[in-house]
Image (cartoon, rainbow, N blue to C red):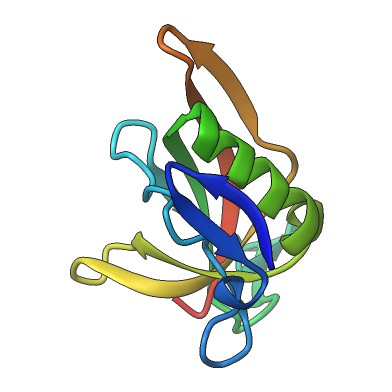
Length: 140
């Protein structure tokens, strides 16, 4: 059963799951564009200032997480697919999904990501959309 069609690409419920059962990035939607892409590792330590002496610094977690600012350029039809996927399959951005991103480990690689907050979009001439958002990446 087709959920929505973008530029002759039919997106079905089965095509949104990867081989390991995770949610996948919708087939037919482009990868993020380089301008507007940035990455920052999340804080893994806790720092406590002491009354006397050096501050105490300790690990909060051993989990590796990075925060990424990402941007996409979508056609109007691709925007409709993205909105439907984000709303239903990605549970308004709360669900982890598999996507390929450049993470500074030697090219583009598959990783698990989820949205942090809401994305923003701006309509451009020609019914094209510039979409920006923040995602967190785990186990990269």
